[in-house]
Image 1 (cartoon, rainbow, N blue to C red):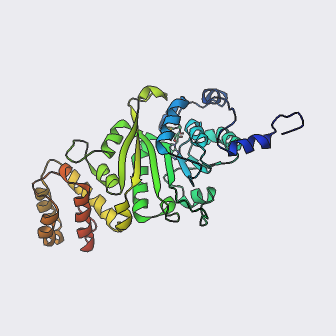
Image 2 (image 1 turned 90 degrees about the vertical axis):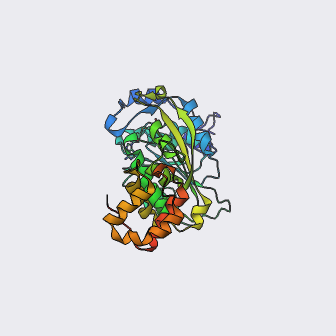
Image 3 (image 1 turned 135 degrees about the vertical axis):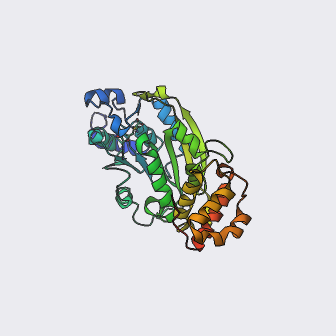
Amino acid sequence: MNKRGKCGNEDKAAMSLSGTLPKLPSIRELIKIYGLSAKSQLSQNFILDKNITDKIVRTASLSAATPLVVEVGPGPGLLTRSILDSGAPNVVAVEKDDRFQPTLRQLSVASGHRLKVLQGNMLEIPHQEILAAGNMTTKPIDTINAPIHIMGNLPFNVASPLLVQWLHMLANREGVFNCYDRDVWMTLMFQKEVGERLSAATSTSNRGRLAVMAQSLCHVKTVYQVPSTVFVPKPKVDASVVQLIPRKSFSENDMAGVYPVLENILRYFFTKRRKTVGHILRRLSKEQPATSALMAELETILDFKARPEDVPNEQFCEAAKLFHQHNIVTLPL
Ligand code: SAM
């Protein structure tokens, strides 16, 4: 406090260390001041209602014990404000569009530097840079092994490639997914249709490659449906927030080499989704004769009369392990 009993800048910053942000201009005002018109090529659809971003953050159960939150595409920063308001002590936000740097830098100061901002493309940025910005490159001394979180109202045009990249990194325990044995939880906003594909159960029409890739490593749950009217500008479709929490069984299974094989098998199967598993495998053994030696064993794993959408995650994983053991890694397209 200064002599008049008013808070100076440092005091304000110190206050924000405890969790609540000082009063800030509204995001609507900031967008106006900085002339931040939305760029469709960067899938910019902003949320301007803090009730919504608070609700998204509540689904992630962040707390002062959360070691790191990585936010993808903070834009003008309303979801970021909700993340900081949750008390998260360490947030690294990666934003491709440099027009948001001034507003995000202000937010960083207002948060007492709990927020660090990196400018870059999340698909390309080395995760080491994220871990370094979040001071996560040395072993933490805390005893609570709380999970790291990846969050974001994802740019829809790169949402699926981003998730597929993270799933590969999770399987291989790379980057943020290789940080002193900490789990990484992902709470991510997708277009509703992508959310439905991710959480699709067996024997449903949305079931495909993405569902099995995600569900073989993670528990996948839609936690919040968000109507398109919430976004500015309003997109053509609704959105949903999906949570992906790594399975315990995955930690015990070594999926590192197997995961790319699983992805290839899924691609092969789901491009023939009307055919039965037996038909698809007989075709594969003609196209790739090495697989014919595996047919008897595959018949003990998979139901040859089922269609790809009826096959449970575990069975696809068992099949992928068998292919991997026999060094059959790539499949014809
Ligand atoms: N988080 C803000 C919100 O909820 O209002 C903005 C979300 S908007 C759907 C997506 C954001 O991701 C935009 O700010 C956009 O500039 C950013 N973005 C687009 N592509 C990106 C990429 N490859 N890497 C990082 N950020 C990206």
